[in-house]
Image (cartoon, rainbow, N blue to C red; front, side, top):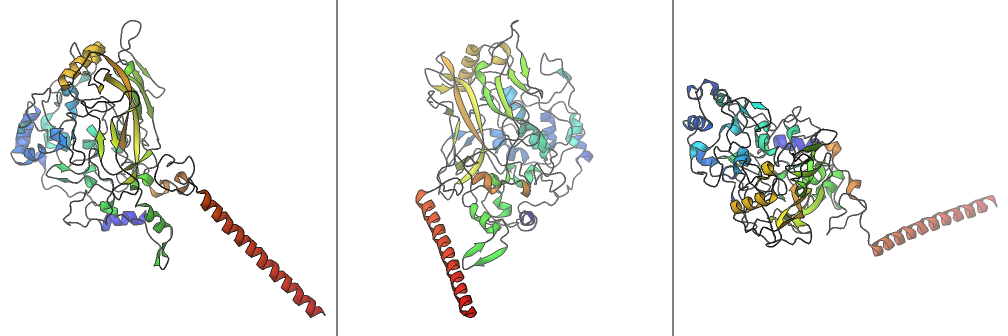
Length: 536
């Protein structure tokens, strides 16, 4: 690990533990940012007075479009159209979901994606109190209001001039305000991203540790013209190259481990000889042709004290109490395990990942794809085969769901859930109305006949990198019923056996033993013979 850190600090150039460059501007001194502002778009107009190209750059990214054509699979993806096993889909729920959009005002299909003033600069760059509330179409509260409606909880209006004057480089809190809370709550979706990473200790993440390297998200996810490197939709599964040097022209993804550490990062204490490199470092480096770095260096996810959802069963949503009222059941730690709005959940902490072969291609089940409801429906599939040079064994969170589908058309359905109206599931608990409206908004056919089907979704684990002493030990994989018990296509000593090889090995051992015994016996016999001669 010492060499890993040293390499990161000196050789890579793309990402280092060095402090971010100090800003040359104090935004609190700009008269343009002193307001008054009545809305977020007015702040954006002030920002664009200096940062003239920023909005155009943002509008070219997936943070703005929520739309993406994946060249590796040919699929049309993005939050605008994709399905998942958590809140399922954004369509018809835009005003709620776009609390995590880098814009203002996206509440339905008529949102103007060409309006620069609708870009939200503050959500990524603020260093003050600023929150985009679900249901307000990407806006913060501009006046004192009850939120959520009917909760009795009051939210104070945002101080836009103060927030505008606080802007600077992005930090973990900025990125985490959305990426830590995906799926409807802290740590719900990813498993390796939650609020514990705002101020993590080294035991949780060696890169982001506040008492260590203190990386921001952008330290690894380097940004150019507001394009952020790294994506779970189109990730880089294998990067078998050396570390990238500072300023080196490259098309590589700077968010990979190898971009800093190289693909042979472990210290080889003994130089290569006639028999090749030896020693623990060389042995570990030999694993990098088959294993992702994350497989060894992230032994468990959800380690920061925040549980992640592992199961979400929508089929029980809509269940009301004896008085016809919605209710919530919580576990001993206060986490909801049933909600009339959403159904049943199962949560877990310190979870050992599953492991799959992965070459970077992910195929999703889309809203128009026909499914086979007789088994578990994969919402996504990680592609990759053993011995493929682009594939590695990756750790994943295997999330299991149960969600609605049309029994006649055999497609997964999009429910209308969150927006207060007479068809939203969370407000009227009527699945028929919610599915009809969701299907209409998503452009899906809907027969009116529906049921629930078991689903499964994989999430790559790549954050919460543990210190060296907590890395996965050899015996946790090289064992029967070990971590790699379900990984196919490899011969794993300790897990696998070949009868002929075992017999040959035992045979050689037996021959060696016979030879030793025979040699020893002969030496003893000769020694005794010599003693007898000397005595005579």
